[in-house]
Picture 1 (cartoon, rainbow, N blue to C red):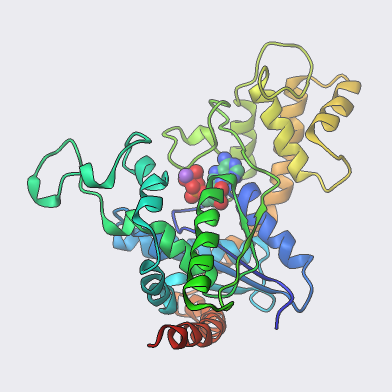
Picture 2: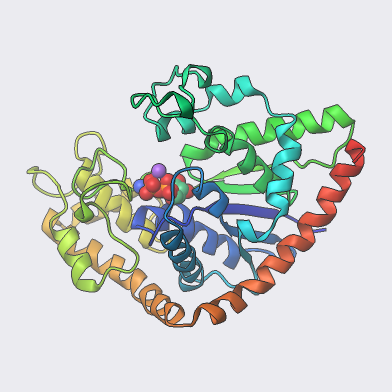
Length: 355
Ligand code: ADP
Ligand code: NA
């Protein structure tokens, strides 16, 4: 039995940006590198989640490849972590069906993801939406897959009897739903086979946009200058950071309300500096002590980002230059290991259910 089982996933939606890297991916690498050999770590490219919204097949295939290259480039090690694409392990979909029979429609209706993906208000009901056949343009049809996305997410986690799930704060609601489903199943069959997972919140919760520091850095922002991509060159990093929105207050201080731009830069620097400062606040005080100007701060931030990303960039190019078949070979061990854990657990569940 593993000491801890960690599961987390990321959608294949293109090259990750610095927010994804600091908020999601880097913590996985840290977890892996600090883990006990008896811990079990699974990191998945959740492509079945990606298809809950329309995807171009060629692009999706490319993005999957890029995300796998990213996994290897940032330092996830296939010998220490189980790396795989969700669609390669059919038990995710099977588990989802089993759990669907316990998932409350009312609970799912109250969740926010399907509403935000469809730009609907918080009080939207799944029953008010027009069917595909009604040809009404104003209310698009709500697809079952998008609506039941949290059930698939619960399946991802419960499939491996996960004990710890590293997530961003935006996912905390889904974890609560997962825990509830595990308990509902256990009490329905008077069993303990479903493991209730606990949340591990990322230390870098919200890296903000460089062009509008009141918004999160996001791939859906129309301005490419708003985000650093993990494959950006040194020059691109320097240009984007030098143009990052700050303010006209002299010096440097940490105050996310009053000085969101400067505070975001301090925050980035803080997350890239290996543990010699206990908080961004304290880091700012130390910088202030040396009379740093926002311009000097930008220099420090650009250097720190480049130092962190240079090796990532290099390894990314290395992996991406491999053939499709060679990349496929690298993925096989992870798929086999994931299936090997998932299969017996599904068997036990089905046994409990009389299947
Ligand atoms: P995006 O917001 O760019 O669409 P996703 O929603 O695909 O990114 O998020 C992928 C992962 O990266 C999630 O774990 C999410 O919490 C994390 N993440 C995304 N944006 C940021 C950000 N600006 N700061 C910190 N973490 C982020
Ligand atoms: Na998002």
